Image (cartoon, rainbow, N blue to C red; front, side, top):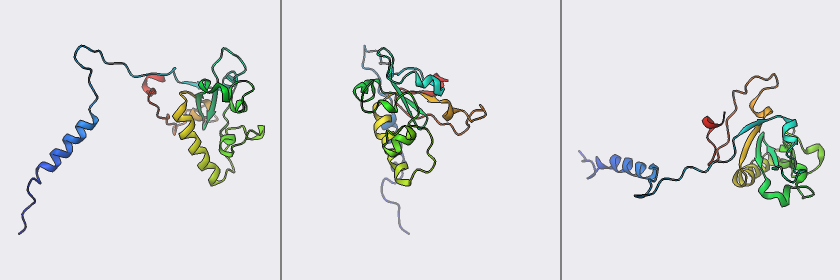
Length: 171
């Protein structure tokens, strides 16, 4: 009968120790207070009318755009999204279809994804994740993403992950 390898009982303990070491939250050094997590603005629900107010026309207003029902603050990219900028047409609305098709045609600047090809849907997901979620803070969601057409809550709603976002503090 074969004997177990030496140290076989210690392997699970070593694995547990490694997991604990990797997931442990760093503590402040002696005499230092820990810094609070960086937080963005509160996340809120936007109607189409409310979102339209943030289209980059007002100099002192933030610039918002929505993709897949997620509202992003793109003010830091004012040279791309501000008044007269190349992508200003995307702002102040949910431009999901336009992002998927890489189109600024007014007919494409809508939330509607009906009829998009597999390639366009792949492009949408890629830009959504690698551009918008990576670069710009989430400031809210469109009513269409959170609510059903009859006004009841969308039970499939799941907030997007971002470092500053904590759903229990937002709603």
